[in-house]
Amino acid sequence: MGKEVERKFLVSGAAWRELVEADIRIRQFYLAAAPGRTVRVRISDGTSAELTLKFGSKARERDEFEYPIPLAEAEEMRAFAIGRVIEKTRHHVRHRGYLYEVDVFGGMLAGLVVAELETPEDVPDEMLPDWLGREVTGEHRFYNASLALGGIPEIAA
Image (cartoon, rainbow, N blue to C red; front, side, top):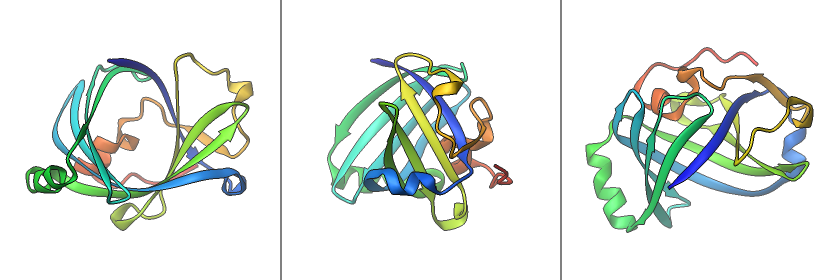
């Protein structure tokens, strides 16, 4: 089990694009979602898959369990998905030694760009990059499970 301190931000600038180290095409869907817990399947670049269980209701800190699963089984599980399948490209961007995951959403969520920072400790605001917009940590409408199950949030950086 791993604890994560996770912060989410809308992205307000394009300066991050020059810093991209890698990108991953992701399709993910939820098999279960309830307050304080989710079960998700993520397929990365069409070549690998993992099952993720998240527990907790604190905005910045949750328990997370991840397990690799066979790609064929992940594809079969899609038949049991609740809500929509989320499509996004995840870009890895480093700033001051921290890895940011900048998700550019596609499909019905096109136009939404969210940056996540997962660290073992809380990062002070003065260490954050300028291209981050409004922090949306704790705003459940911007969490992937809500994006899969609910409406499309109004995008405002």
